[in-house]
Image 1 (cartoon, rainbow, N blue to C red):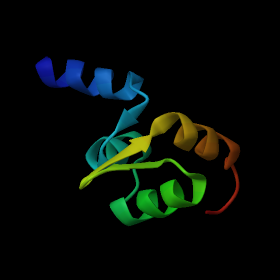
Image 2 (image 1 turned 30 degrees about the vertical axis):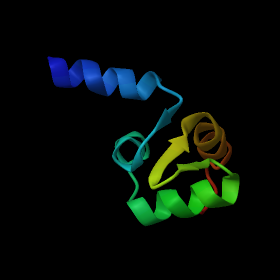
Image 3 (image 1 turned 60 degrees about the vertical axis):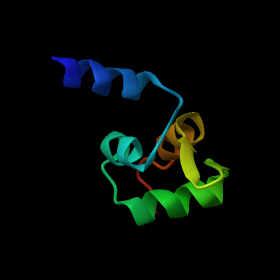
Length: 68
């Protein structure tokens, strides 16, 4: 139950780490990193890397039917 709440919270957040992004988009870390860098969705603070899900969501919604 607690895990389900954490997953739902991560799905509603606008930013997360690579594990959250992998769950959200069902892609590997290199694919996510590549798209995030191209779209400007990568946020680095020191050694900490976060992904802006708003930007990535927009990108993937616009890619429907197109090959990455």
